[in-house]
Image (cartoon, rainbow, N blue to C red):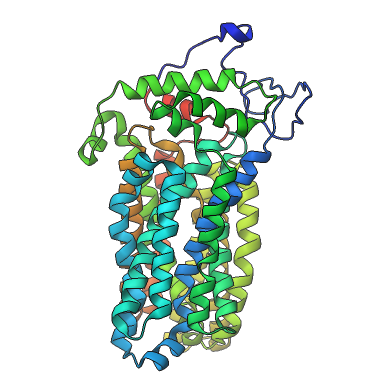
Length: 485
């Protein structure tokens, strides 16, 4: 992409770097406001529609969290009502990841062909069908089909929600708004855990449909991603969507010109497939996206999350108290991460997050080493609980949302679909591997498992420091220019 000067004659030759993405500007006023990152002067903007659009999109994230959290509070009731063996219920629990892995192959293509809103609608329909199958299940077969469908549906959500937010958000708010994806995943899982202890599993499956309904209805009131509309040549809709996002009195000529210039450049390239990602012009984006997802998962988060209660009990602490503290900690820390994402920057926050996870992993590892050696046994539960909570807190502040935010920013729009599919596939495959191997690793060596996760955290810091660029305060087009000079 050429980053040069361009003007809009109709609007008096406004410089293309006069970005129109700043918040807190009231319509029908002309305000001179300095952007702390670029020093640009911005006139007449509003972010009300951006916030509404983000709120609708994160209903998909909330659905994601509900799907992930559903099996925990419903396990005993489902097994009792449907007379399932442990093996049958294990299949029900794990088939979500299988559906998500398969969904990863199509998530990017659906988002590219039907649009970001279209992809979210398709996912909502698939998840709704899955929940209805679970509600009407009288045995393992329909139960598993429903769980598979919800896994397939949330795989698309895990890709399209952060991408949609990144494509509509002002550059100075993009990181914080994209982090809401992770926050609402956590809120969805926590909601399910709490409500699931009160309601029956069938009733819970019906309530789980509500975010899908809200998302589909809410899409009547929000625009499609302007960048996707420009990509597919829907020029009139592109201009209308861009204007709606910035406010009717905002001057969008600068951003419009920048997006169109980038689209023209990207469309001169051949249509991408999975093999094209490994061309020189895309390989750095692939390394960054895939690498971040590998480190996010193999640092052990799914093992720590899924088996937190058992870990607390193995260390001699109350599982229920520990998991309650775990759940209560995640929400405020994720909110803090959303605030810091656009203040400190992505790179710094991810590295600090990985460093904190390393400390947490080492504390848990030390607790199990002491227990194995019969030393300082009174300290074992304290170290284990402290370590897990430190690990979770630091994961929530950066490593949870950071890789998804960066993923949504680094791929050129012509390969965003196939690149996103690859990244989602890697993420879900890693999640399955870690959750599947956690118990085996703990049987091998409880302390060694957490020391291993700590080592991955150290590698994460080195990887981010050496490979990952800072994307804070840059438009998506500027990010591409820096990745492909």
